[in-house]
Length: 192
Length: 235
Image 1 (tube, one colour):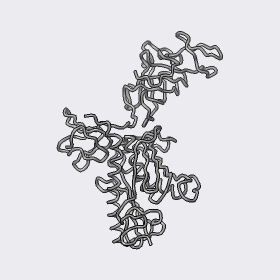
Image 2 (cartoon, chains in turn brown, blue):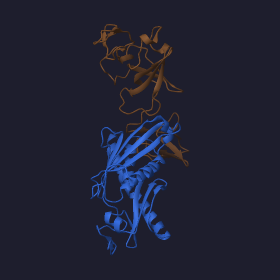
Image 3 (cartoon, helix red, strand yellow):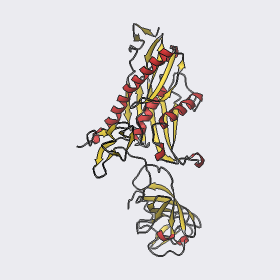
Image 4 (cartoon, helix red, strand yellow):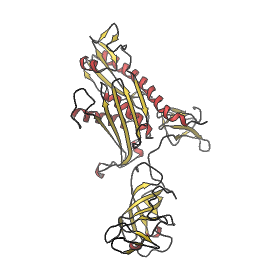
């Protein structure tokens, strides 16, 4: 086993299989544990695993708990289908599946009767990922979550907040949405 | 006359490399990048992804696609090169993709592509080796898990002598060119091509020499990456 805390590169042997189990950032081949990324070598003594803590940015794989910025793609009776376009605080593009669903019970804290009064196709929303397997599930419960930018269903112009409702500046139409508390401010990287 | 008393036209010994300079993480927008100078070659490599593969029908539900694109700038050679992909660069893109794919843990990122752009800004023989070497550094810089850090180097034959890392004249006038890419840890061969003629014995000699050269270049790759990331070491 090499010294803990040393910087390793892909292909560097860090330990042998008798000593440790391969963990994050390592793999096992022919009885050796080898680093697969650039990072610092660590040992998890509880699990007796070898870990390489990345020193580089790593590929963005979605996980439960991430704050996601999504676009509403489709509305059904009990579900909102969204496409995740950004993860707050991360510059990288998403690796893998990007389509997710928000069940009607996860839209707001209160009972939701009509999905069309909460979200509309094309809305940009902030949501929390609550599950990634077997399919991505999101939730917009809580005041930080909900629409951060919505469009008029009549003329497609961006809506402006008027107290608890949204107003279209060009046609004057009033619409209802589940809004985030910072609607219209464009905070894409706010992590909640 | 390419070699005289064991000294080549540019003053190198038969088993000597051209000067190499590698720098990791040079592009802001790319996920990982590398700039490499190898003799008269100037190469920029950028890695994007893993990201969603589009159109959807090219996605592989079991693993990521490694898509390397080798491109020569129109000003990279003496006579202006017509821009865009041609037969040669399409081939190099393919063999590079396959060499890189065999070291990347593609199964960790299903339905995605990992795009590697290799731009040749200035060319002087051995660009495919330089491209793979630069791409490897860029992939490591992007934090993509790999079995090993691939590296490439060429050997060849000039005036009946087997030599390492052909220069432009040696490539044109010489008898053979043998680019080799390996995973240095276990010397697994990732790419092996040959242009010209070698006897079986010469081939073995050239392959050994190329692998030796690869290991030299691998040291420089490691130095470039450690240079960038070792500064983080606080303890």
